[in-house]
Amino acid sequence: MDEEKPDMFAIRPDRKGVKTVAILLLLGSLFFGVLAYTDLTNANSEELSQAQIETLINVPNQQGENLSMEQYQDFHKEINESNGYLIRGIALGIGSAFVFIGSILLFGMKPIGGKIAIVGSGITFVGGIYGCMIVYDAAKEHLLESMLVQTHEITGYLCGVCAFLCGAMALLPLINARAKLAFNEANSVKLVQDESE
Image (tube, rainbow, N blue to C red; front, side, top):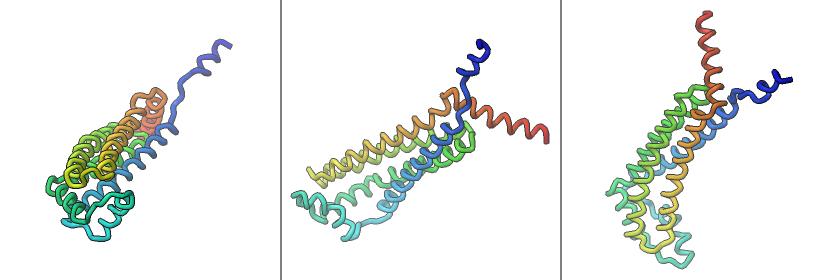
């Protein structure tokens, strides 16, 4: 009976956990990729179309605000002149690529994937928040007390939180004992096969 107890409480490899983290990181990288694409598209357009602006200011104006198209166009120009869209778009794009590559490697049970995803999350966190600060400052200047100012402030917080969560998730398999065992098991089997060939 005593001999069976160590087996009962033994730490077993957890491949499912690592693969779940990899899938969540993949989804995070796609989310950052979409945001990056939007920002880079805005950075390349000097002026927004009338239809785009109407869509963006429709809700605040229904709430009793009186935002004009000129105000929003000036806001857009200010961000472009400060390179806010460009900085945030590039940071999110590079970070998204790193997290994507890291997630694929993690899914293939390569611990280096977690480290790459952490680097990507760091780039997204720093560049994303810096870009959001530029956008928020422009919103305060041109949109005054509009609810859109709060929207851009919340966007900055969300960007930071999402990047932090991606980094924390990428770190989990690197510090978890069961995940480490799974990495060792997956990579040692391949080494044995290589030697036999």
